[in-house]
Length: 131
Image (tube, rainbow, N blue to C red):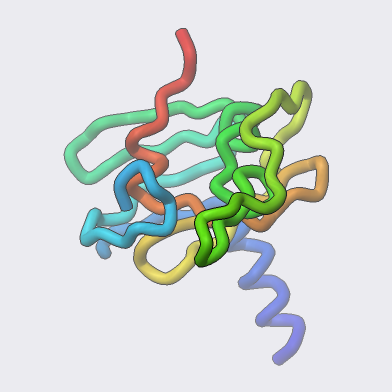
């Protein structure tokens, strides 16, 4: 039983396909549907949305824009920001795995060990790779 759970977990990290199912602020929830297809392809994460829109996002960009507290910091009830250096460059980083978070987001595991950002569907859809 334990082996089956571990193997399913590993499988979900390499390719996620969603036949069914938050704005630029990652913590805001919306009713946006998950992508129809989400795959790690080399140094990119490829997404295909229900409306046919396709994205190919560089792993470095995803890591740079990670919506994690480690990367972006946290604001306390007094409005003070703690931690987070904000976006910075991560040359050569790759996505090594991913896991779906409910019906609203995905987390990515990166080759530098980072894995705490929760990327909502809206947040990912709003991202564009620099031309």
